[in-house]
Image (tube, rainbow, N blue to C red):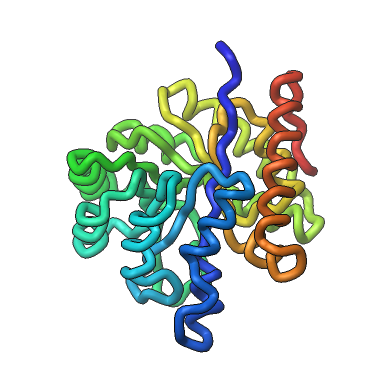
Length: 257
């Protein structure tokens, strides 16, 4: 079976974070999305949080109207968010855990412990023509639950591994967990995405896993954009991912220990 290409989804949440710090309309997340697409992004991700701390409802509507690539809406599994998703009709929706007090999404969704309510959300979104993924840890129990729930896609939470790499702590065990989880999910018929905390080097390593077909990256790219510009940051990320995919084609999947 030929190796699937790997897609890059650019998360524009923190463009909105900067905008909201002063109010007004700039910087514009929609314009940032257009720049990212021109630089090689295959899609755009935006997380509409319940407290609207960065992306707001109008951003989601404008992104859907104006970008020419798929929109992936990250959202909690709530009645309000399902209603909004059904109205906007993004290409995809990624169900994530959400707590008001957290700075960012701190862990994967407990799919195993919420199978019944999540099954209903996945079904309702699917009926609206929205492809659903579950943002989960690379644990067998969570992956098996995703299959039972009926989600066609999972996004593996890479944060623990990336944090270990950044802190220069032992990371091999976390990377091995991701490798095994991606293989298990793929064998179960799930499409496998990954994200959270990825930078150039960690994205390159994950791109070398043949089962992973999409990476969603935001905070790091927006941070790099302050120094190098968004166009340059996205092009550098695209190049890193392509190097990783070339390693996958050559049969190598070594991570960062």
